[in-house]
Amino acid sequence: MTKDYAPILLFVYKRLEHVQRVIDALRTNPEAADSILYIYSDAPASDADAEGVEAVREYVRSISGFEKVIVVERETNFGIEKSEVDGVTTVIGRHGKVIVLEDDIQVGNQFLKYMNYCLNEYEGDKSIYTVTGYSFLKADKANEELFGLTRSFCAWGWGTWSDRWENLSRSLNKSDIRYVATHKSMLDNGQEFSYLLLHQYKNRYLTWDVAWYYSCCKNGGMTIFPYNSLINNIGMDGSGVHYNDGSKENRVEPINDRGEISFPLKFGKFEDTLRKVVAEKKAGDKKTILRQFKMIVRFWLNTIEILASGADRVEIKRG
Image (cartoon, rainbow, N blue to C red; front, side):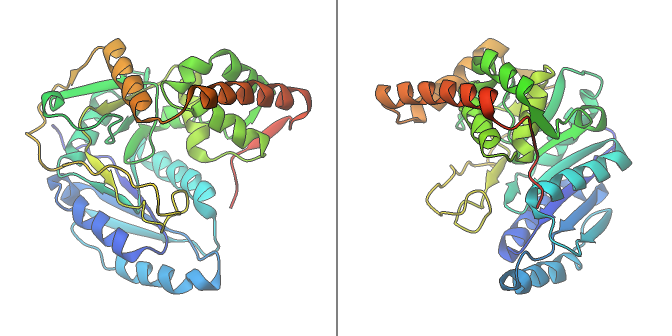
């Protein structure tokens, strides 16, 4: 593989220990030494966060082990949604592709090799919108050499190209809600994406990842992912923005306990992959038949309410 490495874009805030673990994990990848690392540090949202933000900034200013480290310190608080959209747009505009991490994504020692291979190999395949190191499946030694294509998107260690990112829908309107209603099964892909999108629209805000997931699906874009995960989320400890109650622990996978990834990648059949993802999601759900029925009713009631009297347009949340 040539050393045409994508820049790494890391978003940080006030969690020093998490950032240190993320950087240490990145440096276990041989490709790190030849990769540019961009670090976007958001300004504190309140005085209470100022000390943590400054501690993180002091640390990231001293980081070495990469081809170059470029630190962007926000002077005002952007918030995670605005910061990520702005950061990805800026970096991908300079380099044409990007690998994106947040401060709680600990990568395996083959993550950068895999991500760069995919970003180089599949750049010309316009049906591929994203590449992620996260697996939608539990690790299984029997699946170690398999990779899959899915309509799902996960923002835990991912990458894309500028010509795909330019299709990000920064706002949605009622025609998009009609699309969601008529393509619900495809969009859900064994998850509850359609419910989440309607909930956000009804409350008049969108997160960047929901907008991006929708944009990918609407444009027929697929995501490449490993059957056995190459990343662990270490942020579900009550310290984050989205997972801050400390009660939803993500599974921890043996991300460095696997054989050498061989190229070209071996893909499972799309239908088999979809069936596995949907089956595993359903197996983990604990919904009664009554609750499932209520969710379906709520989905259609929300759809009718939005189309009848909801906002004509909703944008990605700003700050």
